[in-house]
Amino acid sequence: MNEPMTESEVFFTEFDALKADLALKDIARLTEELEQANRVADEETAFIEEYRRREVERIQKQIDWQARNLEAYARSTDSKTVRLPHGILKLRQGRDKVEIEDKEEFLRSSNEDLVRTVPESKQPDLARVLGHIRGTGEIPPGIRFIPAQVNFSYKLTKKGEIDEDGDE
Image 1 (cartoon, rainbow, N blue to C red):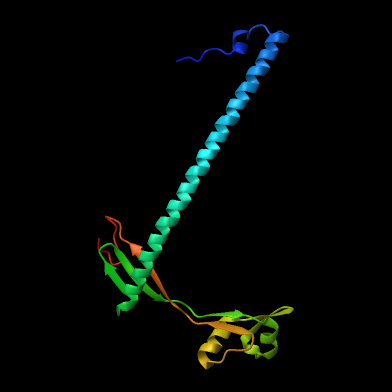
Image 2 (tube, rainbow, N blue to C red; image 1 turned 30 degrees about the vertical axis):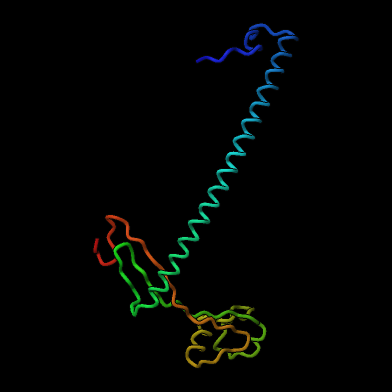
């Protein structure tokens, strides 16, 4: 269905001051329509984005709750891996870490085998520091030792997907 011609379209072929002014009037009206359409679209977009945010938050809370229950179950078993029809639960030992809390104190009080010398600077050698802590149990001054944690993860089985052992 064709829209009716605007006043300026009727007089398209010959412009004079009156027709030019009518064209400006049409442009002003169309600009207002465009701004209104953008305002409505922006309001609807904001409404939809807020809905999405609330739904994602609600659903994510349910996922997190279920994952905490799965982790508790996995930790209650004597197995590192629990295979279930709809997925796999895993408990894996993480890595020990060390952080330099006070670099100056560490460099001042530690022996040379726990640092590496880069031309014109002395830097803690975190791998050696960790090996020293593991070997002696002694934590050098200025170091914070973070023991490894057992980390939980799960993997969902999708239809037709083959798991790690080649089972479908």
